[in-house]
Length: 234
Image (cartoon, one colour):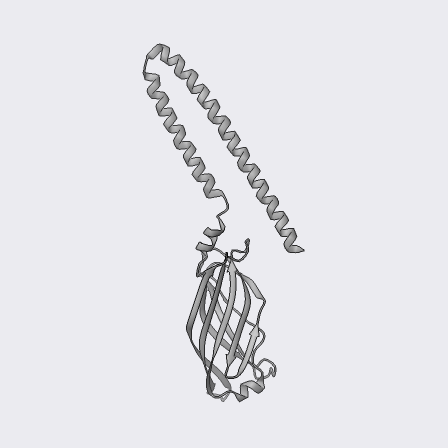
């Protein structure tokens, strides 16, 4: 229901924009007609007194008015909302995977080891994203999440915390040196529009179970991208 209201108000805004544009064009046409009439009367009066001099002045005036009209249309086009194709092009490959970390919580029996990708917004504007699916497989265990969404401002990094990972029992059964894969399917785009891009990737991860100087368990992680895709959504 909220989406329907949002779409309704968006259509009203678009209609008001069209009305504003039509009003501006009508005023422009009236101004051109009035200016042309004044210029013609002036030229006629001067032509009876000074011969061809008014012709040159009228041509110069017509040239100046043409330049003004062209500049007006260029400015108007720049003020209008960019097309979906332009938004999709501007936002291509803007949700950049920058790093992958892991969280280890020995006190949490249900979510002891958690894999957390970190993305950076490299677009010229904010990004709204929605994780349609993200799955992590280590050995024979798989954890899948979906439905995480949010907005990342321009130039900001955001860590995805899934709040769902591998249990303590699974973690203890993992080898001290093991590996797996991280896969995700994310749609994103400008916050005021529907998603315009889809990015998918498969990443190989290496997991190393270690202990720090005080004997406390820690986990190190290496990763490398196997495949990545970022395509426009029709």
